[in-house]
Image (cartoon, rainbow, N blue to C red; front, side):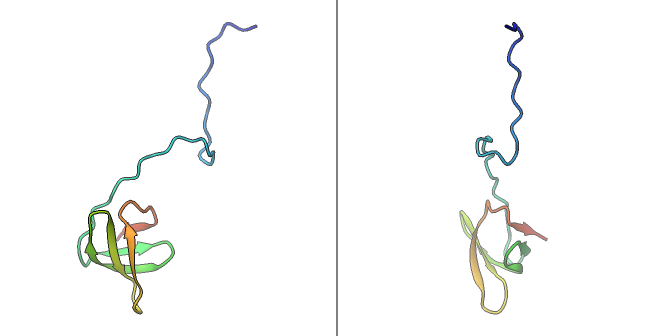
Length: 74
């Protein structure tokens, strides 16, 4: 039997038991260009307290959470 202290276990990023990281809200401004992983390039129409309304062209207007990792400012 060992008297060594237990070592910290390494947690893999894909593990369902990995600690959750709080998402940070990004500040967007009106008419700012953004890129979304699924919808592509767009322009911010307006910002709300928890979401951003983005126009992706061809009449596709989508409300996206400000904490979304899929939306990045350009």
